[in-house]
View 1 (cartoon, one colour):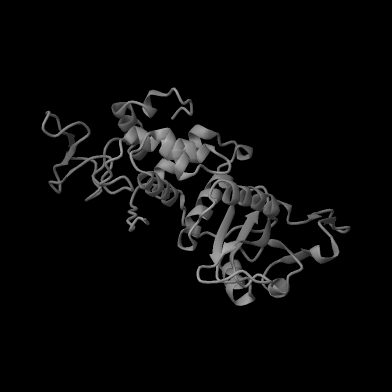
View 2 (cartoon, rainbow, N blue to C red; view 1 turned 180 degrees about the vertical axis):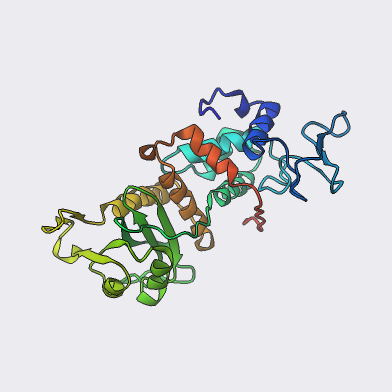
Length: 309
């Protein structure tokens, strides 16, 4: 899909439906109920409207929305496409208020719910281990906002904690964790990183045990203003700059664009920033391909909430 805002798919419903059908069904329409493509036929007639199909195997009727995050949504498909493009191409995100203004919705709540559905489509659910032999994964944590029901005080106990694992030159996985204590952090680290990996962290005490779990563990001591050094034996750069660069974009987005993130939704905002990082220009993925990848994530997911007042 072209990233040009003049693309007809962003303004014409028929063109938008064709784009989504081609993305979801590259080899032709497949029944979302029984999963078979062989006996699917396109339906015509004014009473049905455009985009309807019938499965001769299970006798069900469906459209490209069926079985996706768009199901039962009254938002036109061309607005879904445009909103997806805007969210995936904006480095620090785009607020629901901005979507509300640009897409001409009658309600801010519609834009808010739409944005969360798009973020849900960005969630990958990747389970394979990161890193591996000869690979480096940086581990770091940060704090964003205040936990619900907590008051601000000294220290970090009242703040929402985020843990990120960044494969150097590759992808990131971020998690909203209860705290940065080892019992909350280490199980995630061990479950998501291959044992053959060289892991790098700061000097935090919760990471002291990692030398027993991975091929190598190196640390930089931020408390002594040590931000990186070169291993004299291997020549390898020891730092967690990739993780810190990821957090710099994440925090600018959360503080400058998404200023009122509810704690129960933080994992979806993390999915959004992870998605853009994992599909960034430095990896050869530009706006059009990034939006197409987000479209592929809509299938088999539903998201229903009570929208806040």
